[in-house]
Image 1 (cartoon, one colour):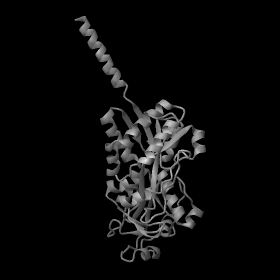
Image 2 (cartoon, helix red, strand yellow):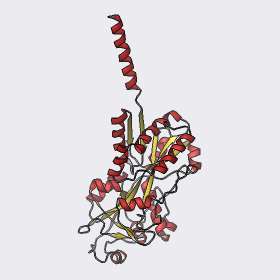
Image 3 (cartoon, helix red, strand yellow):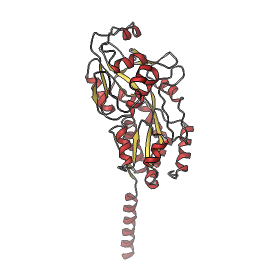
Image 4 (tube, one colour):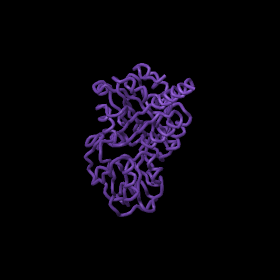
Length: 340
């Protein structure tokens, strides 16, 4: 009897030890990948019982939080360059490719119907174009009846990688914008804007505000059932915000291990290449390999499992190509943070 009780106690201790051994990791930052990170966390827990929590707040928060070692990883849509990574003792890799769309709320104007080029987008957000029936807009949209109404630009209120990628696109598409504003995580907009924190609130603000327009990650367009503009490409044709055209833009990625995957995908070449594609990135500490390995274990599951790939596709993101995943695995091995 004593042997049986002893065996039960030992078995219980093993069970408790196994339960306690499950990984628990926490990240915060960019809202661009928030929907897919949330779904990945659920799928990962279902498959492994390892827990991942991720909260938004913007890319700036993601960088500052992991720099201060507040959590296990930071999310940013604006990749850091090698010197900054070295200074902050961080490593960096992409996780998924998405796209930024210009969502609008104009009565009578259906999804994809509004056409905008670089001049028009720069004009709206610099304040040079303030009415929907401005001649620049009506010339681009001769078949639409645009209202004689004030444009309400909705923008991010905090330091944002989505803002950086959006303004990178405008900078490449419009010389005046490049000279006067450039590509930044925070912008002193020339237009009279309505600020909102995070992709989710920008999307909700557009949905609730007539004659508004704002830049959001594609997943939030789907979630809020918003209309989004067709944009003029670098090649001069028009690209609707569709997964097919996002995939064409993704071919422009130029990742390398030596540069810690630093890249900006906006306004790439190619017919029908959607001009505001963007990768989002994860930052982990280079001086805490055990913590980083828990993070890479999660993202390895996301990159390689069919469940993880499907979750990304269902939300309108593009899973990373196999050659990029292979490169990331090499990077993890090089810096001693591979989970394998």
